[in-house]
Length: 143
Image 1: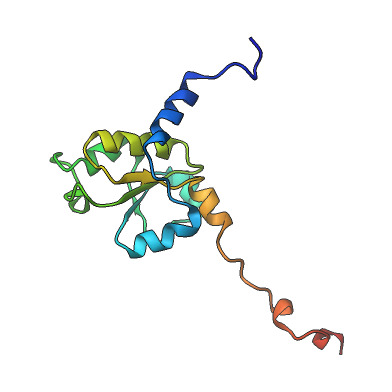
Image 2: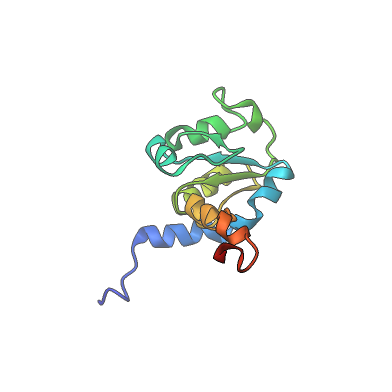
């Protein structure tokens, strides 16, 4: 079997997890947050230090995510009491977040989903700050 024909089991699991998710496009994240979605950043501390925080997101380590968001768990966060709340899981590139969101759905959080492409895709769609030279009228710098 060639590499092209070979598919890892994790690829199949990921496709299955994503089949039921209404994944959020990076450009739509701010609107989701404004509408009351709970955005959960599961990236490790090292990645957050390197790349920056996701403003407005709650940081929950991946290894305790289900316990913090399960509405029936004695270890849940107060924000997770409503099973109908929109929860958007964010990882670095949008892979582990899909698996996590599918697990949250199995716990009864029917509106759980993830950010397509993860933090890196969100960061890529941010407006770039203009440099002062770009703000100057044409020819103004030629004096």
